[in-house]
Amino acid sequence: MKITAFTVDGVPMIKEGDDLAEILAGLVKLEDDDIVVFAHTIVSKAEGRRYFLGDIVPTPRAEELARLNNEDPRFIQHVLNNSTKILMRHPLLVETVWGNVCINAGTDRSNTESGYILSLPEDPDRSARRLRDRLFELTGKRVAVIITDTNGRSFRVGQIGVAVGCAGIAALRDRRGDKDLFGHELKITIQAIADEAAACANMLMGEADEGTPIAIIRGYQYLKDDRGIKPSFRTDEEDIVKKALLEMVEREERAQKAIAHGERPSGVARP
Amino acid sequence: MKITAFTVDGVPMIKEGDDLAEILAGLVKLEDDDIVVFAHTIVSKAEGRRYFLGDIVPTPRAEELARLNNEDPRFIQHVLNNSTKILMRHPLLVETVWGNVCINAGTDRSNTESGYILSLPEDPDRSARRLRDRLFELTGKRVAVIITDTNGRSFRVGQIGVAVGCAGIAALRDRRGDKDLFGHELKITIQAIADEAAACANMLMGEADEGTPIAIIRGYQYLKDDRGIKPSFRTDEEDIVKKALLEMVEREERAQKAIAHGERPSGVARP
Image (cartoon, rainbow over all chains, first blue to last red; front, side, top):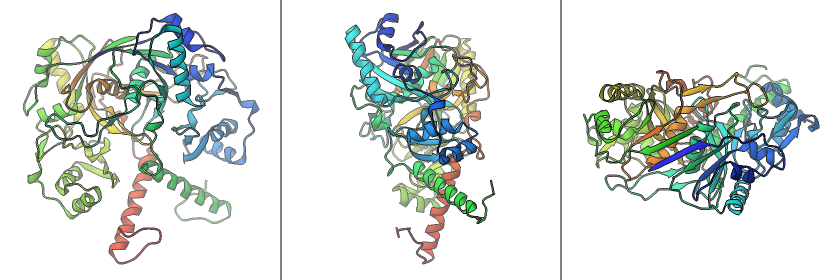
């Protein structure tokens, strides 16, 4: 199998209301089955997911977590507004309202004006479907769309591109039951194709001031479905790491409360 | 930036002692700065990292973990022999002797004959350096080498390709201090390039009986160094997930011991 992958040159600074599909269609000639990868930052901007810190009033909870993380309490309040669970207090690892697990709910201060912060799209799978449909409308080409963010990993330093939303591509390729070279059934293998494609694209897009927030992967044979990235999120029941982290947060908060009430639990240093 | 990536056709079944570099050099014309990605399975086989289960005598500890995982105790004993820490008992997530964290220490029963198991290379960075040097010797081309495995992830279903060893490419690209589009300093950004390249290659190589264990990424501009993948491993001190998991394993084992001694700790079901 052979693919080409390339970044799209000439993408302008994106602002709220911009039609990303139209911009892209004007810059590159798409082909059927291209995988079009958008960095979430430009999707978030086009969708108006930019917030002014001055509008946010932090709760005491946000102020406490802000002290722990040496962060602006209003920034942390915004993260909490977009989260359902805290899995780590420092750094602030959360489960977002739509199910992705990431630091600061993916909220970003980079690549936006001072005083503003940028959230992930409200529903990145929906954003991906809309981009895919609009690209078809404009070009007649049936492409897949992936929206990426960069996430850290357990056990390993550094960040890689991951898919936060997708459309027209099956995020997971279930190979259980397939045979290996010796005819044995593969034991566990669900290949996370959308995340591998996101990593591939992110390798090209980089992170900083290159300003190449769109990449295209061409020539890859992928399964098509429209379930988005959501099937990639582990359920609480099957997620042992999440369980261990939730228990740790609970212990930490219990210890902190005990300190606040004047007790001194053994083994826990006074902050 | 534009890259091409392709799998190498015609790689034969690999056995102990095979010269992978020579085989590859006979199949494809390499270019300077190619990133040559080998699935660890063929590197492991060439290096004789295949073990006969019948030769392994399990300890009681291996038998206990084997029951928990519905596995062959000899297989589990082999995993323990190659591990320094248990981070999860079921599935058996360990830190390997050379520092990578993965399920079953990367030991595999797929893609090998019945009754045999296959370990990761003893030192995958060294294996990568040797392949890189041998390829230079044979072809005069200066390439980078990455050796991959597929690993599961926290919070997400499915597996992706990761680098278990590399040579001639900086695994991490430290962008701290770089500026974003608005001239702000990027807050945290160490890009895990070798892992992104591994994911890209794995997307093409697949998992099952395709028999395409070598892929080449061409045209990518990368930083060069020879520190291998080891700088990617988080230290114990900075790894909060590892800490939470180690604590969980300790609690579980304490509870189990209590049960073995006839006590019945509250909230822990008798197995």
